[in-house]
Image (tube, rainbow, N blue to C red; front, side, top):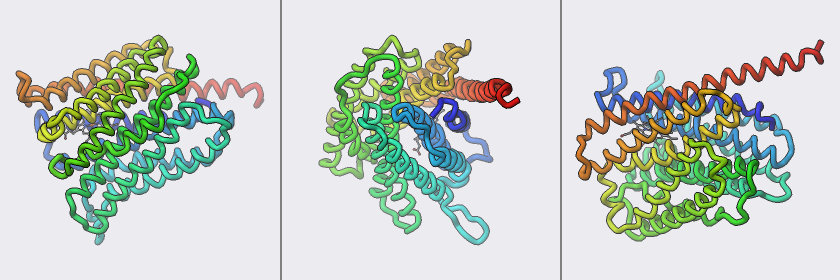
Length: 421
Ligand code: HEM
């Protein structure tokens, strides 16, 4: 697939990033100064933010870049089915935002019926991922051997399918009216955490290696299957400590610690190609290292149970999803869109790094309130003021992507003109 072919989907992904980041910024200001009267359902708006980030930004951008690199490996133009799948995934992802904004996973009265709009949106998004997985299997079957990035994508997609079982479980509980805190939390974190750590991290590592493989030789041995298997049970650490039996905690914590060590292996190998990486990519890799370190810290007896009573979960999630996943993905998307030559690019990268850095420090402070000399309100407000920079960068990259798309279209038209005339 020509790089041009995935541009529209990357633009939709960037648009989703702009909307979801603006919503996150709105929530952060709401936490610092109070939510306005017209937006009191904080939980529903938080769901709208997190699901658009998951379905619209990260998943769509990962899929678009995977299709691009995969067609490079197979040497085949991708069939129309791929474009149908990407259009459907884009449409469903964007639709999830209003669906969750109204009532989150709750019921919404429409005429005489009560509908779980968020759950319905999740289910239809899930269908388009199954379609993606099926098309991926078919297209990748043309490969005579599976290079490292493809092996990582194979396992990332398996984790995506496994984690979508969590979303379906949540939907099933709503539909059947089952109320069990253990299963509710297990399904929620099977989806939230395995999706974020498993699908995002493993797929993104594959993209990173595919990108680096065009510039340098790939390492001969890197862990793929052990990494995926170690990540799989770690989602139980997201469940509230009071609900997790001790043996289950240790299985999850040891697997998570092992995943942390295997991530260090990838990081060490990535460091060999350090000179090829932009500062934004280096920042992403640094925060992936922090994620690996966190996995080891959790093995310390008592730390996990203690952290359950703090705000560290939000810090942990954003270190991974914003710090590692979004910074690296944004850098790869900008490269793919050919924005590298834009004079604004280095500035945008540094503004992003500054905004994410301040926000993560404030969230870490909020998680460790008893050890820092600042009030919660002060830290909430610092976190809030870090967010306009992120919205601004996302907006600028989105606009640049549209301009680039138009320039591509007009240069194509000009290029084709003599032939047509
Ligand atoms: C652009 C910067 C971002 C801002 C300003 C932001 C803001 C927020 C806020 C205010 C919350 C609620 C915190 C609380 O309840 O105390 C939140 C939760 C969350 N965010 Fe973000 N966020 C950002 C980026 C991201 C990204 C990139 C992702 C995923 C790719 C993400 C996924 C989540 C998730 C999964 C939750 C928890 C949802 C839940 O527990 O229901 N966020 N975010």
